[in-house]
Length: 442
Image (cartoon, rainbow, N blue to C red; front, side, top):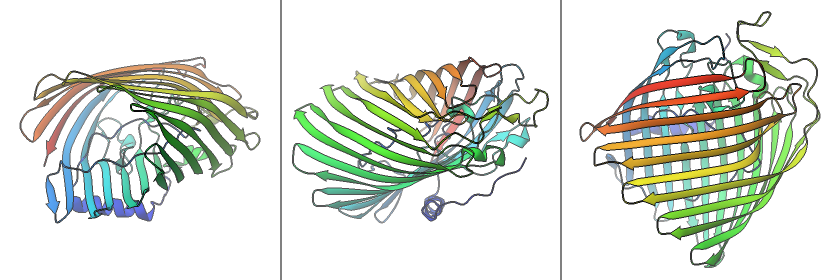
């Protein structure tokens, strides 16, 4: 096994240094992220001022907590037949920082650092610190009717569950860094415009997956028009250029154009719906397509990675996209949300995958010290641009409960499972996970 050397941007280096000075904190390192899609560049509004902190130095506030997560995983390699189980220990630290540099400029840092330790498969231990997908450094500038946000979003992840087309893989280490700028212009009380530019580097952390490395530049534009007191809408669009580093996969040029609407139906219910057309253009056929098979298959290397026979065909396409998001609060203690959509994304073992997804989550604060959480999801995907394209369905669910043992110490227990059904041989799997987590708030 050879590990790839990689560099981290200067901005990210500053983030980690600031985190170390802060004192540190974490929420367990998350295990899923979406690969780039033609609607992936939606602008983010600035966050409200942070009021929850446990350390303050002059105007700078810090919040930190640390913990340990122990998880039993019955199928660490996401295999249909040749399953391995293990217990994974994850110590972690969460950190957030807020610095109002002036009344109109502020700097924010949010990150979680962790490390995976496998009790029986030490070769899968993290090769570096893990950084959660929501890690982000933001600098906000307010100038007249303009809000300018400079940002660097970064993560280091290892769990392959976040990539729905992957099976028979125990670890998929990747470093993702997106740096850019977003500008909001409040034209008047009824109209606002936004534009953003982002540059993304996607670097896998082991040579056997370096065919997936890429750099991407994305430009996004949107408008927001006040239609009624509780209804807003507008147009959204964007283009992205994706260039694969090794040249083994086809470079892509993608984009989208559509409309959206947002509404506060009641004081407790918010709805957003968006839809339109998206396109994907690829620079010819890939020189190599990758298939990942179990390591017990004859004549494969020890990681089960082999070339597919032949060349993948061109997969240019124009297709619709749609997204729906609903959030609701039922009383003072119960909140839940539903999201659903259909869109095209870049894929690992093919050029792209068209995905239909539905996700539901709920949180019930039973009382002051006990909280119950639940989630469900369903995904249906179709690969394009592969000699043997995969069609798959994934269904997952999870439930957890947290208990506040004392003012600073909390405990959580939970269970998660995923079932994948694939049309390709040996690509289906089931995965069950049970965890116990302790968290200390400094």
